[in-house]
Amino acid sequence: MPPKLVSHARIMTIERHILEEQKIHPEATGTLTNLLYDLALAGKFIASNTTRGGLAEILGETNEVNIQGERVMKLDQLADQTIYRMNDHTGRLAAMASEEHEGLLPIPERYQTGKYVLLYDPLDGSSNIETNTSIGTIFSIYRRISDSGPGTMEDCLQPGRNLVVAGYLLYGVSTMLVYSSGSGVFGFTLDPDIGEFLLTNDNIQIPKKPKYYSVNHGYQKYWGESMVRYTQYLQGLDGQIPPLSLRYAGSLVADFHRNLLEGGVFYYPADHKDPQKPSGKLRLLYEAAPLAFIASQAGGYASDGHQNILDIVPTSLHQRTPLFIGNRTLVEKAEEFIRQYGI
Image (cartoon, rainbow, N blue to C red; front, side, top):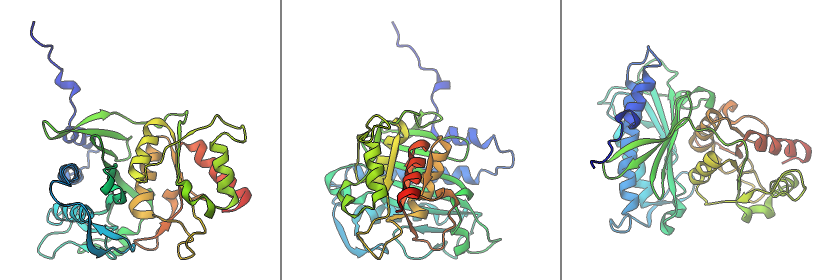
């Protein structure tokens, strides 16, 4: 008996999905479609190198320190260069900015500039590289504010509300690309046999019943009373809710992705460990805002403890922020504790 054929209508590649979304917007020119597909292609290249890092001798550190004061890993550098070089010549972007660089990354003068700007964290969770733990890439796309010519700082310093597209790639047991263009959240898994991202998670919504909380308990000694009480609340110690299970990978993309699919909250509060960073550790533009956009599209919420992350107007490329993200009720509870007990 011949094998049952799979209906082609059920096979949705990321390219086909992006084109289908483009049809919703009659004014679309295809530029954004091509930009997204180029990011997916960059993700394939990065994934290929992360899975064979030891064999390719690209594990370990370079001799460089990035703008964040962190040692640059070889895979960090490779991911950063891949995304830039995949997008510097297409005529779709006015400028780029990366977590690894202090200032704007201009489009070379020999190429045309476009109407979008791209911000990205090339390899989130890179401290996990040596232990073969999940890592990721986070990206944000804004429509430029300036009229023409090279992109400006103003083009990049926009609140998350202005995002056109936000997404991330997760390099783990399988490689996934999750993105939103404001019409829901969609997840694609890379099929290594055919080299294509296929739709596996359609219209993702954060489950209303949360399972997990994700936080670095190693910093608890530096927390204020509000965070101690909030954590006890999540653990069910005050009897208000059933206890949630702790899951923390040390990779923001991995922790966020788990909670996106299973329900829960990730938080990295401001603490008293480093007086030079009183406003938190995570980067507003490269980490917090794009994931907040995705969370909002999936029925969740992201806050700095006082206001919606999407409403914060950035003042610098590497601005930091506390972050609470996941199920709306859990994030709003964190805000409640902060109002009552302070940060």
